[in-house]
Length: 122
Image 1 (tube, helix red, strand yellow):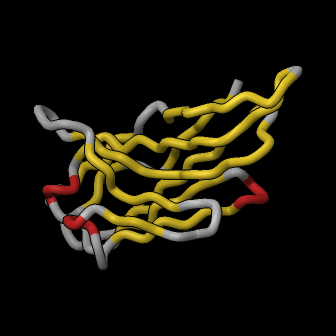
Image 2 (cartoon, helix red, strand yellow; image 1 turned 120 degrees about the horizontal axis):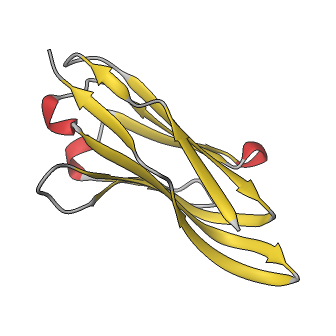
């Protein structure tokens, strides 16, 4: 009952920047945790960054100081600003949102975006 739409991926040169967005729609009551994960070919999906409803953030060690996660509660949207990109950042990036929606009663949701490709290459 909650749909996520990601945007902002693409091809960028090393040292460049990209901004990913993930917008949620549906009968959303509240969104608690928002996060970004990534999965490179042959590797497991890993946490990139997460942000709570109180705006506390958590980052994977490999992206600390380069990536910034933020949220716009009015738009039910989470962003990932990625700076100083490296070839090893190449992966499919997925957003994940957890919260509650209303459908006759309040129900919890744990939804994933469709994934957006980020390729860092010269």
